[in-house]
Length: 170
Image (cartoon, rainbow, N blue to C red; front, side, top):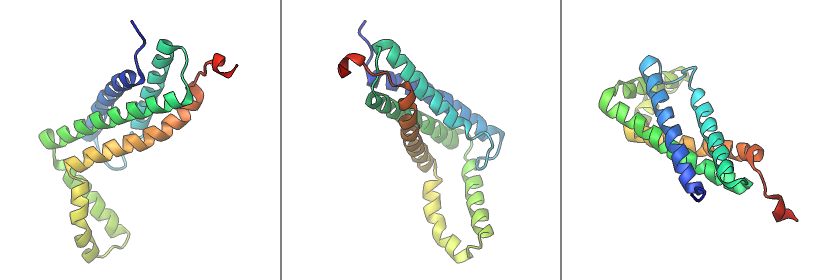
């Protein structure tokens, strides 16, 4: 069987990481506050793990991996992960528990009030925040977060996981 391509491996590991991250995010939504949850950083550890495992599998299949291939693979994994975990959050909020939207809205308002923002400014800004904290807005935020952080993580991880073909440098 020929080695799998970057796209195939990226979709595979992105789907696995996305499903794990979606389940973890739903668990966080069930057990506690959405904003300021002390376990929120674990989602980044899961993304880093998915990128690393994808790199490892690619090198097992192809023996070598350039920095660019590692970066590309990491971005594909991150995009698929963000899409699946975002869909998981979207479906959870839309079908199971939409009270999270109200909690997010309350957190935003109380934060603005603590910062001394006037009620007129809060009233003016709330329609914009309501777009962002809608189920669709949260899906896009998850996707964007995974893409940006996945790109940054991939830049760093690829430095350590690349394995250049020495014959290319002779």
